[in-house]
Picture 1 (cartoon, rainbow, N blue to C red):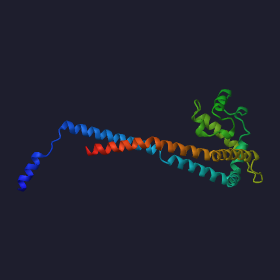
Picture 2 (cartoon, helix red, strand yellow):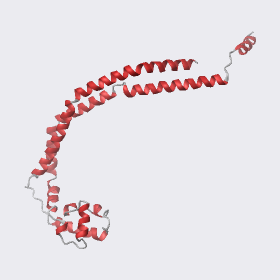
Picture 3 (cartoon, rainbow, N blue to C red):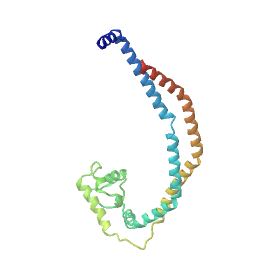
Picture 4 (cartoon, one colour):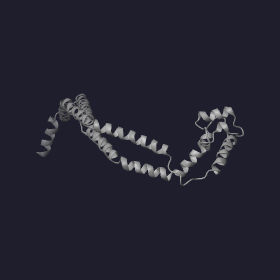
Length: 223
């Protein structure tokens, strides 16, 4: 009886044609694609990650604004620690190439150097000069040696304070940063409100499409 029942089941089991199977598989793949597309759109437009990113930006601006006095103190300390190299730089800046007598460096090559931002002894660096067309090892060596000659005459003055111009430049940069952070924070509530409204509108717009795609996928899976 078991064998007879098995044979009967095989005989009456419904057959699915290859064509119908292919149609069902194509419908399933299309439904799956619609669902995944809708889900990606939901993740992109309807989740709170944009809101959270804006919150993080505001938190960062608030923290940087509160840290501004400490940041200025760190800047002053850095300028203090760099007094010697900055004094040296200012000293070398006094010696202009266009007023010097350097072998092989005439008016034409002086203009070429100036076009690359090399105008004083402070600007001379071998790595920069060798990249300029027409300046080989010989001319580069002449310029480097001319810089070294002046550098040997430099004497650090430990009693000279930090250059006021450097402090003023730092303060201007800090004030610019402070204004940017204040502007970000002032616009923060409006930005968060706008983002929240956009997320709500996106959810209302996408949810019906997502529900339709989900239903279509489940039907295609059953088929």
